[in-house]
Length: 241
Image (cartoon, rainbow, N blue to C red; front, side, top):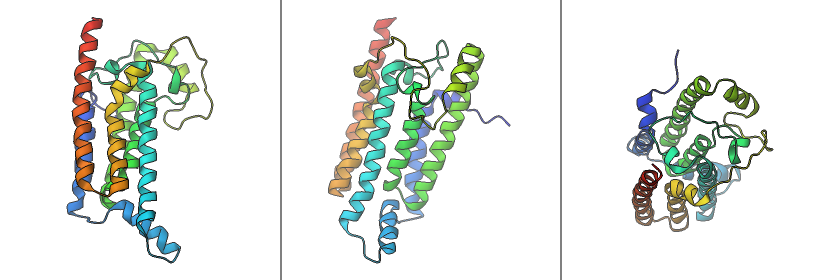
């Protein structure tokens, strides 16, 4: 059974991720209980007391931490592969990047997306949290299988050595391949991942205000910044041609 994503799925992966987030959060129509609130209630029940707003904020701060970690990891990775490659609908197999976070884990971008799903699960309902985390991780796995297959075909033994040395998604605590002289472009990394930083900011705003209007305003601005960054990435790509 071939579990790898199709070329169409890879090309439209951003919109598939977005659609799955929408489906997951739409489950509030079925399950009205917030997952973050449920965690706080469960933990406080174990301590034989009622949850407070501080308890709830601590749960949401954990979500913020995971989302910031996701944004940083993706920014670090994009600083090496460049944003025009990260957003491209075509799979790039002409080289194997083994720098920066790729020295610790083979798929830091997808690990970052998994962390985002975990962080944002506190905003979903209980059912939505399960759908979000399981669905995003399953789709990421299928995308990874496609990339691994294409890279093996294109790079052969070069990629196989990298694959055997570096774990797929569970990062090592130490670098597993030697560094080269390739340097990160942190400005380019931020340009490619500003949307993730916007998502982290939106969750942070909600954590300290519990105001859905402020949350959705920040989230809307994040989408605006995302499309602006896409335009800048496309312009930079044309300049390089």
